[in-house]
Image (cartoon, rainbow over all chains, first blue to last red; front, side, top):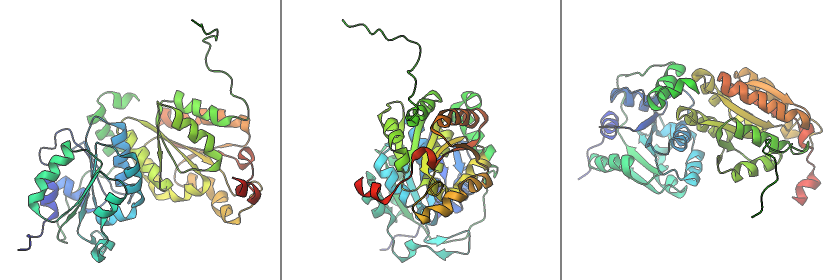
Length: 197
Length: 189
């Protein structure tokens, strides 16, 4: 029997459940709204621009904070724009970094046009070929608890491409101002030192 | 046991021609812990110095744009980053640079120039000539170093402006400093 198609908001909610000390970078568009719907946090950095750069922001953060787990949650269109970053991450091999692509095979903010993944481009195999230690194509909700566990405790870099249904959902927006998003993140992570460096 | 007679009066003077060593010292003194780069022949020695420095992590990038994200993520995590690239790479960074401005994230960019003095490759000229204007248009402060002597002071002041005043600052290292490539030299490399 074919597994029931997954919905993006419930996938992101499951992955961010009891997130603890997890640092999150949310890619431009729907994945930023998904992370906000799961509960806004100062330790989530939602992107309102810089399309194609989410995974690299995650890498910079992971290298700066080797003692913390870092999760990048982004969309298939955003990841496709920065495919080279999979190679860069695969070479660096940060053990504390996970990249999860919520793959609806669409550019969701611009009219639901098909992305390359709709034509079969396989991001998880690409990540594996680039040197990620583990990469999974996830189609079933029952795989999510194990993925969540790996994000918190597995040996990275970890990649997952999670197939979800293409649906337009009500917007749940995080703060927009970049300076605010940066400062609240640094303050929550670094404490007083954030303002003194 | 041999005892070093060297006085503890700070590092030895940097020879004029070894401007990459001067840059490396400034990066180290500025607590830059992460260096992203796309290789350029003009940055060869600096890249080697950064790789050899155990206090720095050097990350080779697929494209320069990645370095802007790398530096932004590092700053979120409390680490200062710098980027090394050729002038052609500046064009690859344009949209990403908007993030630094919107979020007020400091960055020091060290750009070796092409398409400037005596360039032999016409394809390098458009981006090389546009580099200062492109950076300025994106809110990046531009310092130019037009002689080997000018590199170290330019990088020092740029680093202070970047990390002290939370700015994106680029130092453009002139082709007059780096020397002019020729096809013959390239063949022999």
